[in-house]
Figure 1 (cartoon, rainbow, N blue to C red):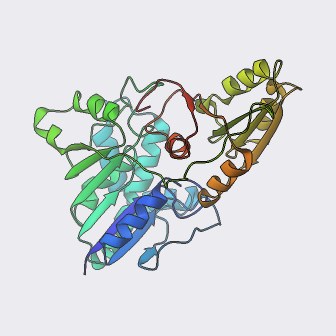
Figure 2 (figure 1 turned 30 degrees about the vertical axis):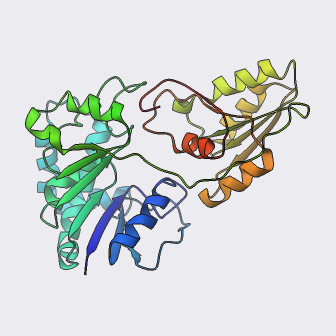
Length: 327
């Protein structure tokens, strides 16, 4: 029986990592059994997974319990500090790394008993701090996105500490050529053949009708309401455009209520603004069919490979995006 362990950030808990869903369906067809080990739970809601997939208890149990774990098993945490010393890693990342390594040490006997043939770490740094011990469970491969190896906006520099564990996995899969090239330039030549590009994907929405301009301009955006996504740029564009034609701005993605109200205000009184909040991935195509977008806007200052852009392309929706990272 072929068995694989996938380590995610929180999937299938909560609404994040929606882009993992189509990949999970493919993996479930390739392995007899697939276990998911989320690092955190984060939310009470749990999404449905294929019948051959089992979700394990999250690795981290909460800040106070994790600190107790570090005190119970201080050696793994001290090893992490020694491994990352002098690499410019911030205190927040260093604490997270120590928590994860100590928590993993407690779970290793359970993971070894499960008899996996392969471990798939879905993220890069700081999650890659787990790799030296995960290798005792099974051979490891790793996927790298944007935030877990890029250190600044635009994807032009590496995050502190990110290359420390790149000698551990058998293969590393990047979501873009830009990411692969940047990391490759920082690694010894002997490790570069482990780097491969494997794009993220999306389901094909099929061609979706666009709103006739006689009815207005329908703009859609899809992102968490956080500073890095620069939704204020979209709000400003909506404000300018709505002075001369009817504009409907539909945003998919949750965030701080005060920040959302501020964006409504920035969009101005003439536009129709509709913040939908977090929408299950399976329902996004339905939102597109409802609002008939003429345009998808992505103003993020850093991207790996934006799945919302891939989805819009599959629906025949034109894109306006910043020229960053893998975009």
